[in-house]
Figure 1 (cartoon, rainbow, N blue to C red):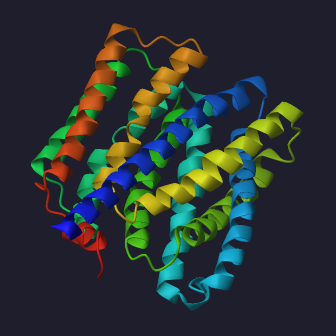
Figure 2: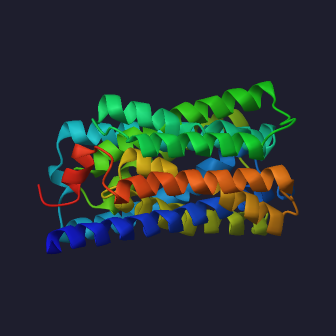
Length: 316
C-alpha cells in the first residue's frame, strides 16, 4: 500500500512538473512572435541562437555532473545513437520547422496542425513502445482534437511554405515524443545529460542551416534579451524538467499535457497580444481542457494498460 502511494505521489509530481514546462513553452510563443515581428529576427537564426546558447549552458552543467556520476562515458553506443536522433528530430526538425511556420503564417494554423500530436502519438506508442492507451485516453485525445478545431475554426490564412513547415513539425514532434519516452524511461542517464547531448546535436544542425540559408544576423539589445531568456529559462531549464517528467509519464500522457498549451497560448495571446478568442474559441478551450483531464483521469483510475510505463514507476 505504501509503495503504491509513493508511485502515485511520484506521478503527480511529474504531472505538475510537465504543466510548469508547458507554461514556460507557452510564453515562448509570445516571445517568439515579438522577436519575429518586432525585432525582425529570421526564423532559423532565431531558433539556432536560442538552442545553441541553451545547449552550451547545458554542456557545462553536464560536464560538472559527470565528475560525480560518470554515466555518459559508460553509455552504450546504441543509446548514444538514439540521443543523436532525438536531437535532430526534437530540436533541428521540430523547432526549426515550427519557427518557419510561425514566420510564414498565423500561429492558429500551426497550432491546429500540431494539435493532432496526441492522436498520432497514441498510435505510434502502441506500435513501438507497447504503451496502449485506454478508451478513456483515446476519447480524451479526440475531444482535444474537436476542441482545437472549434477554437481555430474559420479562415486560418495558411500558406504553402507555412503549411509544409507545420506538417514537418507535426511529424517530427510525434517522433520526438516516442523517441524521448524510449530514451528517458530507461533512466540510463540523468535528465540534464540527455538534454545536453540531444540539444547540442539539434542546435548544431540549426546553426549550419541558419548560416547557410540566412547568413550572419544583426540583432538589437532587446532581441538578445529575448533570445537569452528563451535559451536560459524556456529552453535549458524547461527541456531538462521535461525530460525529467518523462521518466514517470507515458508518451500519451506527456503529449496530452503538452496539448494544454493550446489553452495557455490562447489566454496569453488574449492578455498580452490583444487576441480575443471569442465564443467559439472559449468553447474550444473548454473542450481541450476536458479532453486533457480525461486523459489524466483514465491514468489515475488505472484503466489504461501501459506495462512499460508502469514498470518505469518503480524499481526494475
